Image (cartoon, rainbow over all chains, first blue to last red):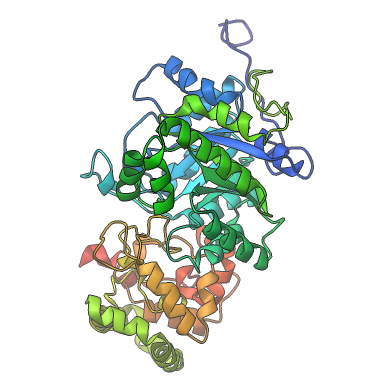
Length: 340
Length: 192
């Protein structure tokens, strides 16, 4: 200790930055979207390891093209490194991150505390999810929590951010400045009610939406037309979910084993016929991105390339959506805000 | 029972009408409940509610009934107990992600709501369930809320939820109640 009571060698304290006017969080993702740029986000496959090097290794192929990296929260109810841990590491290193919260594993007390913790570590985007049931994961004997659902979670964090209080009414001295995200799944039943539920999520507090995989463009187009009819254009940023398929077999496996994935037969047929399935999966993904970006109301894409992360930068580069924009490069460590 | 549940959703409009009449009668009975004491009637009414609603809706006695806002499909039957569903895992044909042989509670809810006169209430964002009210009578809670000449209360924990979910409370006051809870209604599920 020094005479003034501070620890010697203490690292500089990170400061809590308030968002610029017209922004709720000031995150890079929010800035890109509010500037009307076509945004790219990508999903990180979290390591089964305690080594931070593994996190940076997983982030590396995504960082050059993504405005923000999603750190999944035990997706598919499988245990991996926590989303908050990954976000803390990556945010400190200057990457834009999206902290995913699933309602499956934690109750309202834990979640509200984690939101403050994440905000203190510089995380500025959060994705509110219900979460897959525990039965599909690697530990089906776990107790499912589901104290909140994705909508009450959105409203809870919005209350924390905008009213400066916990759901209990207790005051928060520095509210968490979060850009609030939610998921939607436009291609699974009930198709007629999916746009209505999206409207409900916006009502609950969603600033942006990341959809599940879109392999069926006509269904997605109908969804977006209804979203526009409901007057949601301009009220929420919608990022369409895409990803490369590895093979017809993998596509079939996903369709039957991962909850909420719709892949039309025509897509699987095309993968079957391909001489080089890996290349075909990539081509298909690029074509989907190019078709999706033409749909009115789509603000960006969310790339989920599970175990095909190495293809992400090629896919985005070849799709041409960035138009020479360079999203991530860690400039100033400790802040994720300086770059647009 | 699954089959009576499906019946209730098919006839959501009739049940909506029936419940509205019933609610009017209950609210009219408020002075009587006050005279006897809500604390005293709680156990009896909760028992009746458990049997009747259990039979028709597979009611789980969450104590914060939203059937009128969910197409007469009880959300507590959703394996994830979503109060704002459906989730993204609905299977082809509208079947549940977790129990594939059951139709999704929330697909049914939206279908039921489409049949109802005030089905639009399904668009309200519902607050999380207050687990301390498990097993208590939602009927009495609604009656208290609707009859209450509520003074401005500064009971912070409860007003925060009521404010954050104001739309839902306007239609379903039991989901974010403000009237004082009788002792017999709190944690009655655990005492049983």
